Image (spheres, rainbow, N blue to C red):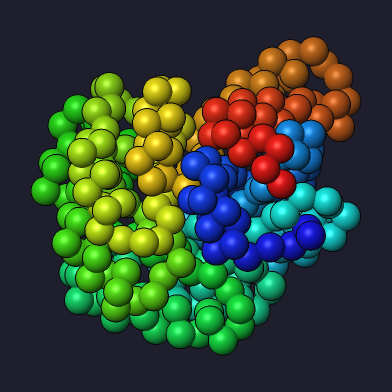
Length: 279
């Protein structure tokens, strides 16, 4: 039951009216904390490796480590490459045994995004790997109150994108941003509902850290089946490490604090997303 593809996890979430958390991990402690949280909550889980950090983290080593933990788990877990923009990295993720990859061509013209995504879906399908695509721009560390809605996902383009690529899930833009929020986010739920009505695939929310509980709940009610979380884990982890370092204790205990902080954060989101006891 342990190792799963993302598509099956999100299909169940779509039918059940909840969302599965996709939590980025960057080392053993964030990996351990995330899995322990999901196991204790009896929740399905998506473990995600962020492509943007591959210059300082080792995708192959993280994949091997994740596989060893997944093999001993009783909950369904998918291993996912997050925000893959580089074709070679996506192919490597498939080679290393990831069950899911994301192709992020959101900064490209629609035609090029569709063409590239379709090629990746073709390759991934042959390997039994799920594919998440992205349409619309979700920025990073920008003022959420000054977002230009012209860059949000358009329902008619979403319909075409899904039809022509065959992706298993679609990441959409309707007012969220990556990183820490500057200004108060105002999510366009009317747009989200229009996208949900236009496409059949599960929808994905990126830029979750910093949204209100109501934002998540309303998003899930309107079609969001996967939520990506990393910034809050990173910020809370750094705060915990600073506090642990003041205690002048062994490094192993300091790092264990990072695991526990990760675990606490993941548990809160699992309960908020409604995936507790859905494993």
